[in-house]
Amino acid sequence: MASRPLAFPDLLSAAGWRFLVAACLVAALVQMIAGRHYATALVFGAALGLTLFDAWRLAGRRANARADGPTGGIDTARRLDRALALLDAVTVALFALDPDGRVRFANRAARALAGFEVARLQDIPLLGASGASRILSLPPGGRQLISLVDGRSMLVWVGTVSAPGEGPQRLVSMQAVAGELDAVQVGAWHRMTRVLAHEMMNSLTPIASISESLSRWAKEADVRPEIASGVATIARRGQHLMRFVERYRAVVDLPQPELAEIGLAAFLADIERLVGGELRQRGIDFAVEPAEPGWHVRADPGMIEQAVLNLIKNAADAVAATPEARIRLGCTRAGGLVILSVSDNGIGVPQDQLEEIFVPFYTTKNEGAGIGLTLSRQIALAHGGRLTARPASDKGTIFDLVLAG
Image 1 (cartoon, rainbow, N blue to C red):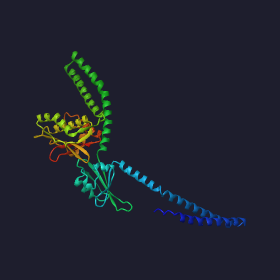
Image 2: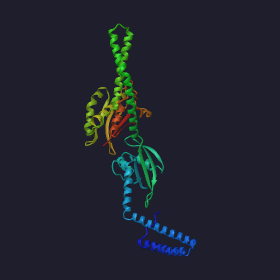
Image 3: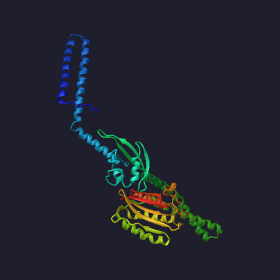
């Protein structure tokens, strides 16, 4: 507990008697030295030293009192501003709640999650009533994974904080368990792909070149047919592998997005014109759920279109053997986010493979290269968004491309 600053009259009185005692001790010390009473003089000298030290400490207390005076409030305000800036810099959403559940404080990440200033957790669209009730039911120190409306998983932790003069408040932190992890994984995949592409191209280029030359020579020369066929196979497979590696280079060298304002109603209509007729000719019931007028998103039109087309192509492959095949493309908004969803009623993706399908080289198709979903997720991450997969309620899979609205 801080000591009470001394008022000026109190300080004057306290300092006055100390200096009076010091003066008396000096006079007595001089007399003792003159009378050669050295032992007594030593005692008086020690008492004088203690008195002067006490006076010096009193002066220090006065200096501290001045520091805590008119300018002390400025320092406190600066410390408070610094603390608020630090809270706004973290990517974890932080809410401070009253015992009745009202929001008393929300940092920048929490406001972005909510989309606007909210009075209660129940008012956050991404949480929904069930998500908010699960958070409010957690005891202090409790933690739990919850799913947001847009499919994201959040790790929630609940604690308590107290402020002077106020009752205890509930502190809720919410951190996405994906997103940044996806970005780290993509960075690792890039480094791995660059190394693989470099090493494979160094080996394949001379093999393909020599095998092509041998194949031409085998056609012109009189060689056994099985030798000519084997050389031609080597040349053909070498070219195939080089094209395979080049496709992965395209994933690594994805350009930076050139952002523009995209009207979602027109964007979805363009997708319908591009693929709707072809899908229906293949016997697939394809429908686009129109966006609300005035909905926009700031993104690279070509890249987002490519990502959505990849998702639709993936859905078309998934429903290839499904009777009454169906694909839906829809658009919703929640908490300041735009969600483009592609759903199908195909064979579905097993729960334990919902993340593996985004890994480069991973594919369940005989002729697949494992690029489409990887590229689509990379496009989402390049826009500061994300791409997730989840099982449909009845059958099939739903892919959610989430972008900042």
